[in-house]
Length: 303
Image 1 (tube, rainbow, N blue to C red):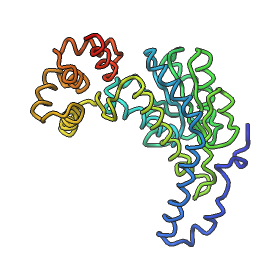
Image 2 (spheres, rainbow, N blue to C red; image 1 turned 60 degrees about the horizontal axis):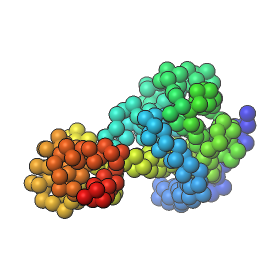
Image 3 (cartoon, rainbow, N blue to C red; image 1 turned 90 degrees about the vertical axis):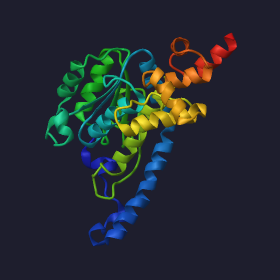
């Protein structure tokens, strides 16, 4: 395994050697300038990110899951993306899962040493019974975290699809999959603090993977969140706004359609676009695998 001090993420940043002498404005200005490298690193990795999206989309289409595995900041970023998918896309919490070394309590309080165990990574993944329909995405800024490597190796044993995301070139976890995303964000402003540029890059990539794969299975109409869950008043209003935007109707018409569709914005939109009854809209959506535009175009062809 590559020694920690040889990793790019552990090198000292020549632009911040006098960090402790900078004014607050100079510090944040420097951090802002360094963050431009994050966008560049993600852009350079787009071809491999696309491959990850294709794997994730295929898994979701097969009824499988996206499973993030990480430790520390990487693990928290994975859990964060996972828990935001149900309210955004109306999917069950089991569809996108985040595993973090040390368990859920490690999200708010680090559990020292948990990330150093290959076996613990394997055991945590075993507990949720991965299958060949799932995609397991290993997250490690260093690219050498044993917990993540252990999980990726077990994922391959059960023929699950795998992806590795790191911030170092030729990372150890890259060797565990043929879909390796290496986000070369460079030395951190604060030496070794990968919650900064490396963490930001990871979050950007997970945003891409979850959003693009959910769109791929019909969780959007145009750029609208048509499967949003109405769990509070803000989201009730948002659902109404989504229907209004999609079909160019009044709020009262949107409310009426949502009531008939039992709160399902996608169903309400499909019904209104097709000018049909709710059962026909349901059937059309089902046949179109949840994609509104496909449902509408197919129905028009039939007619």
